[in-house]
Length: 194
Length: 420
Image 1 (cartoon, rainbow over the protein chains, first blue to last red):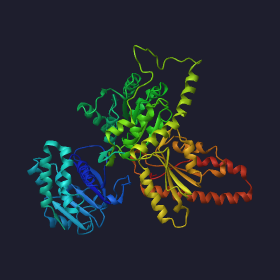
Image 2 (spheres, chains in turn blue, green):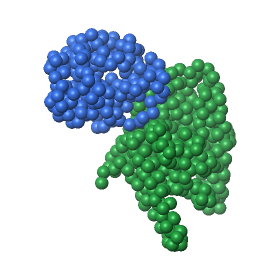
Image 3 (tube, rainbow over the protein chains, first blue to last red):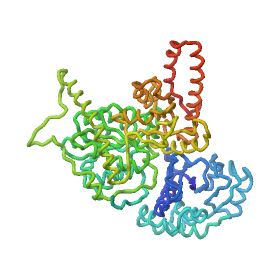
Image 4 (tube, chains in turn orange, red):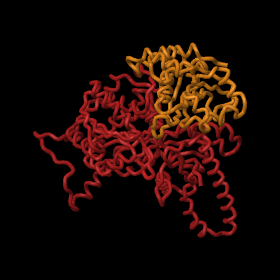
């Protein structure tokens, strides 16, 4: 089972990201569970969403509690790397998927040393970076990075097939689904992982 | 059984889908977190003509249930849903359909009660409505939220039942979680749930009165009749669940067991934490070696009202220790489920009933993790071992009277996972 935390700000669509990937995984025959961490919904406040995906053969996902030690942390806003202890929850063997304007090397170096890249940021096995904000602005014309970051998540983890997201996005966004799919694909291509 | 469609659905949408397939005639509800998505989805379905129903926008939950009472009395298949404070505001009217034998179906997305304000899950709202005379069931995942909503209609509307039914789905843990479930074939649902016809529906051509004034010379008789009829629903509930299993391949029972063969100690849970508890049972069995921990099992109360005395006693008869989890507090009385469990076992011989250890956890949306369930079992086993040692010492001293007086202290429920 892969446990994913999506760390964003209210209004960035982190909960929707988790839901779309859950739908994609289920459509592939996998088991999935998306769970919001529900709080006062304020734009800009840090928000967590949780996602679990497991293979068909692994059986139903039974745990019903927040993800405490994620395998993957998706950071929608790089400013959040400095906020709170969420980043430190990531497993050492885990993957950080970060929306950043910085170069891949610069972001990767933040995760090299214990606590070097801000409070709680520690060494992790894999870092994936993409300028999701740039892509979202260019393709969607909006500063909302959730669907773009799905492309980065898929590139970094292979949790689902990219194509499996088209139907959930169609269902969710209707007319603007195509743009979101395009932003996701562009991010998939541009994401650097190492 | 025809082909079932595997989908990812939020618990709230699963409930709305069940109501749509049940082809409800009247929906009257007031939105409140965490139940809101059910109402929103249903209003969309009605607006999009995917469900041919009257959607009554009311100004409060009190009115929501009042409208359901009226519509049900007129012979409509009705639905409402609420949570927490909303259910409390509805409270006064909840007794009406059960006394007037109207098969209203309601779903509650369980939520804590104020103050302090909490929109998150616990069972305070459910416990506050335990005596309203409704059939009540608890779902532990989104599949069950769907299935039990359908079953609720079938049970409630049975001519030999005609009582309202309530399905409890934990707020957020089910209402806002998307997970995989299967949706049955719609024709098969229609076959399972035939059109509803109330035998005494309001009709100007054949006037009847319902729920009118009852002075002392008749009120107790009406209540006696209600008690007898409510007790009589038990076999029907079993029958409906049996048929549901035959048609759709998923079996439900008033008390459901997990790894109870040879179990000496068990957890008792209701609602969405039950699957997490299963993981704890698996781990304890794997790690327990030769100890009592390795014989841990789990019982879940699927049916809460009428309380399944017989099935419950049968499920726990071989246990040495039963750990009861409450997700609510009865102030001055401990855990409300635990009180009922104790009372259900009171008639058994002392030697034949398990030691009961009460825990309260998961209030106001606090997660109950696998580790906490394991702690409960280990703590309970420790208490049991200490008690055995004490009993031995006391046997020697023959201070039986004093021992009995101290027993009452056991009523204290331990609240776990709470900072001092």
